[in-house]
Length: 274
Image (cartoon, rainbow, N blue to C red):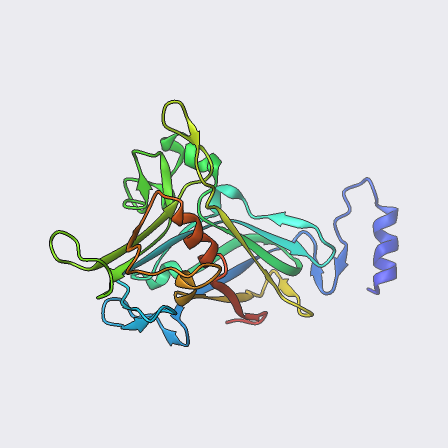
């Protein structure tokens, strides 16, 4: 059926539940699946936990033993500019370099459409940080999958955790030269009286240029994203392990979050991924 006839048919049936409108080969009532695959790299090298040896922009050598971060609050913007919010209840993912299956996010029941950009949050929004713990399940379960990604004393999730060793890091009392970046805080109140904390929540938007991400009923497009660990040290700010090997709840966390906000980049978008 030609488009003009289909439009006319929908006009005639307006008000009687007509949902037959099709555009560019899809039914607007269809739902599809979208995959977002994250690849953690170090410059032009693949990240290898524990045994990989790397150098940051300050010339410091380091390895990575732990890399975890939350991705949440996913939104898609259509070619017409409409923002489609993925259901928040299903929109919290904890990516762990030790678990390859966690690095590919599978979004189901995504409205069919042509999308020009994808936005996600690195971290966990303030609402979920303060929601009753009984409602924070799955990847947000602080006694389960999110164990070790939560500060119980500060009632907040660790959004981004990277740990390792560096010979340039100041030795601890036991002689080890570990570094630890644990970045959280969402701008909430903390202490008595409450003092507003730094807000380290970051959003990242991937645009597809002249191409469109096409979600369809029978096709599963895939977006590939790389996260470059080197940019954690040298994005907007230069971080030196010799000076600050441990950054958790202090103002320098804002520098680290500003850096890793720029560490994510689109690699490819495939509308016909297998």
